[in-house]
Length: 370
Image 1 (cartoon, rainbow, N blue to C red):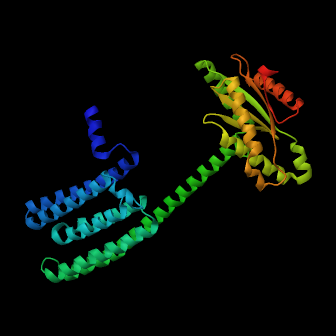
Image 2 (cartoon, one colour):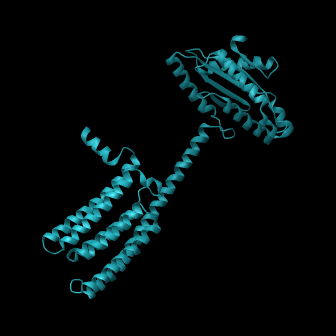
Image 3 (cartoon, helix red, strand yellow):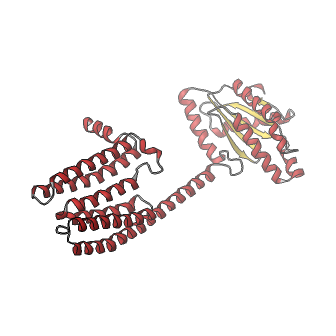
């Protein structure tokens, strides 16, 4: 099994998208190989010229190999369609037109495979491309039929070739049109799937994040708190909680209006979020109150971090874009105790926040300093 898996990885790669592209290409190549095998059966039966059949097989095999190399090496990634679907199908139609001329005894097979190829296009190509391939197939076969009837009228009887062309001119465009309609249905379903995924992502965002500031909301933060407290207990590390409250926020709403208040909250959240360390969490807890979570952080370090946030908020030049809205904040910090609930730790942080406000606001108070 390991040898088979290693061989599959060698032939198809390990990237799932490359495997899909190569798998489709090799499946199409397999149909070509079967066609060449039938051709050589015709050679053995004396119905096909051996030299022309061999020459065609060499050219076809070389073309298929070049396509495989382009896909397998990633060279095709430079194109909008890395699968090179359109070039492969054009190559296939031209090859089948050549088969029609080289193998008069089995030329009906070429027309059937062309029609089948057009149907497969519905699963990959856009509708317009499917229809274009139908007319290309008619043109390629029409030219081959005309040339063959002119150069070998005893083998390719002109009246029969005219009937073949009329049949191809009727069947192939209709087949291509049906393939285009199927492709349109496929594209519609894919678009609906993308829209549904976007709507679900939007609902998930609304359910877990504050719509105004974009921060995690209270519900999401409770889940994150449970996760981080378990992690701190398991790893025997510190975990600090902080409640942050904007000072005199009501005055902004009362004097400048609620729109200015919303803009203040957005800018405040952005200033604090961008100043946090990787792994730190900030959530909107309610109104102008925010919850700060500092994993793997001692209380002294948490106080230094929060003090840095306070200075950043107070001195940031970004407030110049909102005249009259520059704010300060008060914060209460506590160290989570193993075994305590998140609610109890938050209640202790709230008491520390009350102490910061009672002491005059615009400051950080840690529980140990009370």
